[in-house]
Image (cartoon, rainbow over all chains, first blue to last red):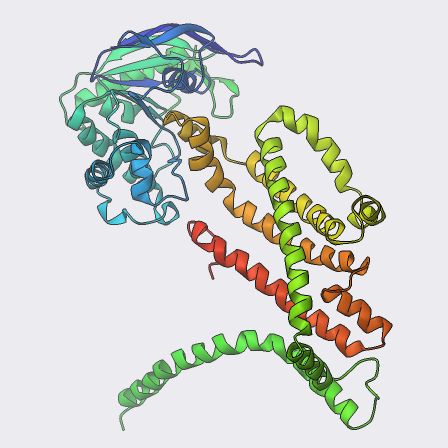
Length: 263
Length: 278
């Protein structure tokens, strides 16, 4: 069980990125966090994985307070962040340095096979496409078998086809060991395809606005009426969370007449 | 013959010719660079042979080559080259060790940077040759002062290169190391070292270039052996061919040692995503 207990983060420049967020995530749950820019989504992930300590409150995994990166918590960033001087296989095995060579090799091979890149094992990262590189990053994060996997807009830099492909792929991989997934995204459809629960956040300061359960049967059909229904609910919640004002990507606020959907 | 078979045969000839042309082009293009110096050399050789010039101050290529061969035959060239090479090697070694150490410290720790970097930058602004009289007073006219002067020349490019490289290591890559809970030493070994490698190799090459520059200055300030001594000796005894032969030796040694660094570092840099791959 992962618990966030009134987690808040104020940056040294005085910006309150996150305001007393409390949250419980059960093992194996897929939680998707969605919200406009500046609502503390990434801040929350960085606090959970121990990269940035929260300024108030605490993150607790199975009774242990997280103060530094933890072996049971993995993270996948928006960019693949592969180490360019290691071949793909060595990148995937990066977190297994202290394991016996044979075990490491077997696990790396299995992981690469699972993401469909076994033939790229001895290739340099520069030779991969964006989607392939992100798949390697997923394999690298999954190989140490974390209980909790955090994803910070992992597919946002990819084209629509690759993105849909990787979403399905992620669900496949999740089914192997069923870690807890917490994913941050801007993409409402992505949220509904993946989530058991969708958390809508609001900005300045970042806090939880609304939770929407998402229990559609899997695999989810993006064209179905039920999918569309959830989508409308999420969009409406997002719209309300922003007080009918739009925070554009460059951080400017702009009023919207009649509360139109801004997606 | 039908039109179709004619064009076909023409195309076949083209296909056969294309790789041959490409191969010839690959061989010829670098050769173009030799055209100008070779023409000048041949021209000067002819000019001296035909008596247009005495060639006393600017010896023709054949005389330079003869001098070079004579120096090599008597073992003089080997002696002087070995002495110079060992001075460069010693100065380079000291300069690289100090530059790497200080560069890593000032790059890694902001406090050290604030404490040490301003002083080093101030010292860097002094033309290193200006140290020569002081070094001679302090360390005498023998090997120590020469090696220290070379080390000072090598130090600064290495120091700057290492500091800059460490400072510019991508925070995002360092975070990957943190997520995988690397200890301080493991972080240096598995993230920082490979990340600074390309810039480090470049700074080593720059440092080596300066090392060769400063060995000449060092040998000018009073030496009885070394290629720099051959230069001074050639000037004082009016032997321009010997001067040019020593210059040629410098060029060869400089190129060879630079190539050695490239060769040794190549296996560590194969991953680089280079603009032009050789």
